Length: 99
Image (cartoon, rainbow, N blue to C red; front, side):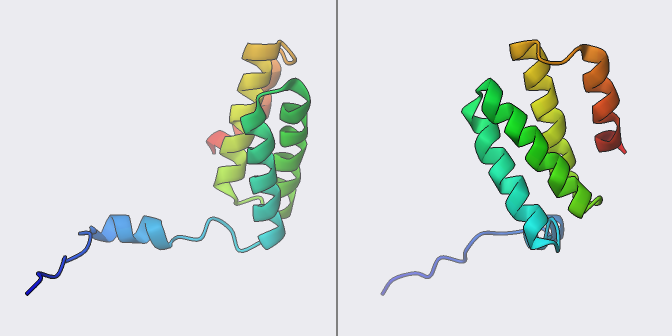
């Protein structure tokens, strides 16, 4: 006789985070995913494209927190690794993500 595995134990908070949909706008989500794919390449051109994709995603769903976070990450990488942006620009353009 084999014992049944009870499965993972989840708290209500964990279950809520698992079930939460990041955005109802499928186009915004697809743009976000394309932006992440470009961001992971860590090349100047791909990061600049990622920035545009995240900005477009945000314009379609201004409540899409993951897109704001990814945009901020991209701006920081562009500034720190490529000196493509100055710190003031990064700070100014990252402000909406903090809200």
